[in-house]
Length: 100
Image (cartoon, rainbow, N blue to C red; front, side):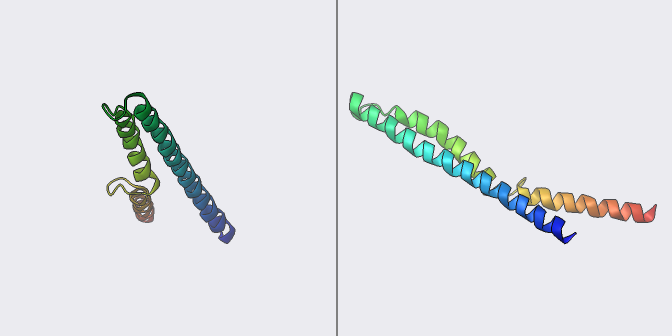
Protein backbone atom coordinates (compact mmCIF):
# COMPACT_ATOMS: atom_id res chain seq x y z
CA UNK A 1 0.00 0.00 0.00
CA UNK A 2 2.87 2.34 0.80
CA UNK A 3 4.40 1.80 -2.66
CA UNK A 4 1.03 2.61 -4.21
CA UNK A 5 0.86 5.91 -2.27
CA UNK A 6 4.39 6.86 -3.31
CA UNK A 7 3.67 6.04 -6.93
CA UNK A 8 0.38 7.93 -6.80
CA UNK A 9 2.11 10.98 -5.34
CA UNK A 10 4.83 10.76 -7.96
CA UNK A 11 2.30 10.57 -10.80
CA UNK A 12 0.34 13.55 -9.46
CA UNK A 13 3.54 15.57 -9.09
CA UNK A 14 4.64 14.63 -12.60
CA UNK A 15 1.26 15.64 -13.99
CA UNK A 16 1.51 19.00 -12.22
CA UNK A 17 5.02 19.58 -13.58
CA UNK A 18 3.76 18.80 -17.09
CA UNK A 19 0.91 21.30 -16.70
CA UNK A 20 3.34 23.96 -15.45
CA UNK A 21 5.70 23.29 -18.34
CA UNK A 22 2.89 23.65 -20.88
CA UNK A 23 1.72 26.89 -19.27
CA UNK A 24 5.20 28.45 -19.23
CA UNK A 25 5.79 27.37 -22.83
CA UNK A 26 2.49 28.99 -23.82
CA UNK A 27 3.41 32.17 -21.90
CA UNK A 28 6.87 32.36 -23.50
CA UNK A 29 5.34 31.90 -26.96
CA UNK A 30 2.86 34.66 -26.17
CA UNK A 31 5.60 37.08 -25.16
CA UNK A 32 7.75 36.33 -28.22
CA UNK A 33 4.94 36.39 -30.81
CA UNK A 34 3.25 39.51 -29.42
CA UNK A 35 6.62 41.28 -29.29
CA UNK A 36 7.28 40.40 -32.93
CA UNK A 37 3.79 41.56 -33.91
CA UNK A 38 4.34 44.83 -32.03
CA UNK A 39 7.62 45.34 -33.86
CA UNK A 40 5.99 44.66 -37.23
CA UNK A 41 3.17 47.04 -36.29
CA UNK A 42 5.65 49.77 -35.39
CA UNK A 43 7.77 49.30 -38.51
CA UNK A 44 4.79 49.32 -40.90
CA UNK A 45 2.75 52.25 -39.58
CA UNK A 46 4.32 53.48 -36.38
CA UNK A 47 1.84 53.54 -33.53
CA UNK A 48 -0.99 55.16 -35.57
CA UNK A 49 -3.12 52.03 -35.25
CA UNK A 50 -1.94 49.39 -32.79
CA UNK A 51 -3.55 46.33 -34.36
CA UNK A 52 -1.23 43.93 -32.52
CA UNK A 53 -3.22 44.66 -29.35
CA UNK A 54 -6.16 42.68 -30.77
CA UNK A 55 -3.98 39.58 -30.95
CA UNK A 56 -2.51 40.33 -27.52
CA UNK A 57 -5.98 40.68 -26.01
CA UNK A 58 -7.40 37.53 -27.60
CA UNK A 59 -4.44 35.33 -26.78
CA UNK A 60 -4.20 36.98 -23.35
CA UNK A 61 -7.67 35.72 -22.48
CA UNK A 62 -6.49 32.21 -23.36
CA UNK A 63 -3.39 32.67 -21.19
CA UNK A 64 -5.60 33.81 -18.30
CA UNK A 65 -7.80 30.70 -18.50
CA UNK A 66 -4.72 28.51 -18.86
CA UNK A 67 -3.28 30.08 -15.68
CA UNK A 68 -6.55 29.56 -13.81
CA UNK A 69 -6.47 25.87 -14.71
CA UNK A 70 -2.76 25.40 -14.10
CA UNK A 71 -2.55 27.14 -10.73
CA UNK A 72 -5.98 25.97 -9.51
CA UNK A 73 -7.29 29.51 -9.11
CA UNK A 74 -10.94 28.63 -9.75
CA UNK A 75 -12.65 28.81 -6.34
CA UNK A 76 -15.75 26.94 -7.51
CA UNK A 77 -14.66 23.97 -9.60
CA UNK A 78 -10.90 23.68 -9.17
CA UNK A 79 -8.91 20.53 -8.55
CA UNK A 80 -9.18 20.86 -4.77
CA UNK A 81 -12.97 21.02 -5.14
CA UNK A 82 -12.90 17.85 -7.24
CA UNK A 83 -10.78 16.05 -4.65
CA UNK A 84 -13.08 17.16 -1.81
CA UNK A 85 -16.15 15.95 -3.70
CA UNK A 86 -14.55 12.60 -4.54
CA UNK A 87 -13.66 12.04 -0.87
CA UNK A 88 -17.15 13.11 0.19
CA UNK A 89 -18.80 10.65 -2.22
CA UNK A 90 -16.45 7.87 -1.15
CA UNK A 91 -17.36 8.48 2.52
CA UNK A 92 -21.06 8.44 1.63
CA UNK A 93 -20.59 5.15 -0.22
CA UNK A 94 -18.83 3.63 2.78
CA UNK A 95 -21.64 4.74 5.10
CA UNK A 96 -24.31 3.29 2.80
CA UNK A 97 -22.47 -0.04 2.59
CA UNK A 98 -22.21 -0.21 6.39
CA UNK A 99 -25.98 0.07 6.72
CA UNK A 100 -26.73 -2.58 4.10
